[in-house]
Length: 113
Image (cartoon, rainbow, N blue to C red; front, side, top):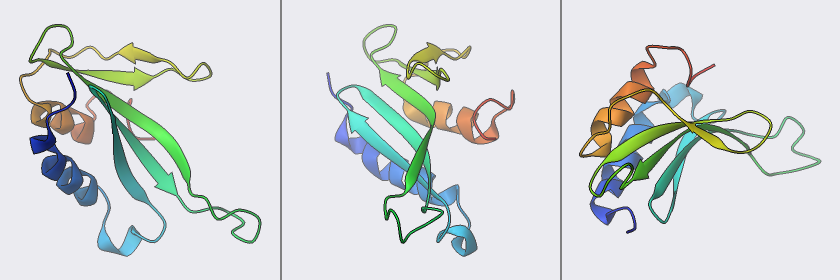
């Protein structure tokens, strides 16, 4: 089951609030939806724009819908090196807002470098 479209405004607002207006030229927080997964990334402009105009993207977290059961959400952390994900130790939630709060507050210093 795909991520309900009703969450897109929440995600867009949450991403925009992570970056101060003065830093938006050098940092963006973005999300992509693929099926029942929302991947959150931190983006930066190229160091040498004359060589490449693409912004880099660093994976921050992934929210998975219907995990572990229908109607629940969980947070996953990126695994360095292999491109995989591992489950973050946090209770599942009925909506992504509580999980976005956990990512923003980052009590274990695992999401933001």
